[in-house]
Length: 78
Image (tube, rainbow, N blue to C red; front, side, top):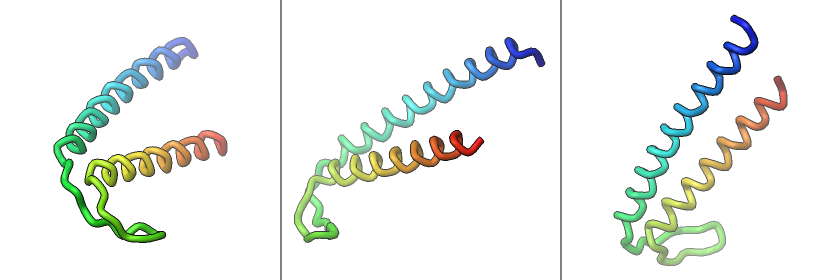
């Protein structure tokens, strides 16, 4: 496979990942918006009631950050 063909193949795969990520992100936001109830959360520094959407979005943000840091570290070691 020539270098140009390899670049085109990689570029096409990037669009698919972007679309899949956008769909999954949209579903996650929809799920969060449908869960607006107050829940009691035991945070590290205390316990209080928080809207479930905040807990869900915080978990999504932490997961995204960990995934981003992991892929960034893997790219740096190649």
